[in-house]
Amino acid sequence: MSAPVPPARAPGSYAVALVCLGNICRSPMADVVLQERLARAGLEDRVSVASCGTGDWHVGHPMDPRAAATLQAAGYDPTRHRAQTLDATWFERFDLLLAMDSANLADVRELRGSTPEPERAMLFRSLDPVDPGGEVPDPYYGGDAGFEEVLAMVERTTDALVRALTDELDRQ
Ligand code: 4NP
Image (cartoon, rainbow, N blue to C red; front, side, top):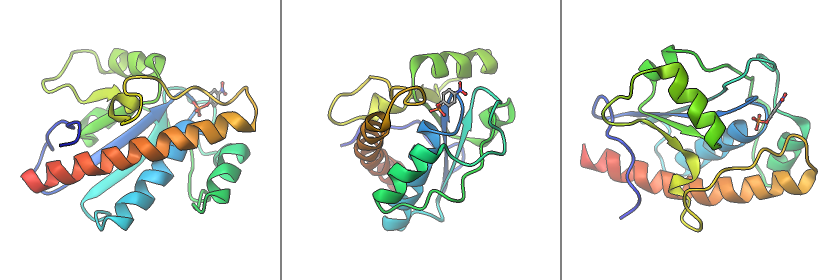
């Protein structure tokens, strides 16, 4: 039994948002990996995925070149990403909002205002099967090793997320 995700708002499909600060490093990497893993699991028509930043500095930009190179070297296609910003509509459009770090999660909840039941905003790494509950560290101001570390965390957590989404969709 994998760690649970909140129930879908409407049975039969599920929508996941990945949230970081700039939407050019961490959440786009998680977005690309999740979409690839969902396609591999045959779930791409039932689970929709998008990513955004709590900040708007990079709106419309492609991924950070270091994030793109790290993904490309691991066999993923990073080219389709364009940065978006979180706004109130994301709380209506998504069943689950996964924040990369605690500051991102606090910003998500502050923009949202009141706390819904069930809670749909949580840390991405609450689903990490190896070391649950931590943050995905911001690699923006560091070196290439930081992007490798992010990819490793993202891949193992995404595998657990896909298992949890499979369980939730099977339940419906
Ligand atoms: P991200 O990384 O939140 O993983 O996309 C960052 C990207 C840009 C900035 C900070 C973090 N920035 O300050 O521009």
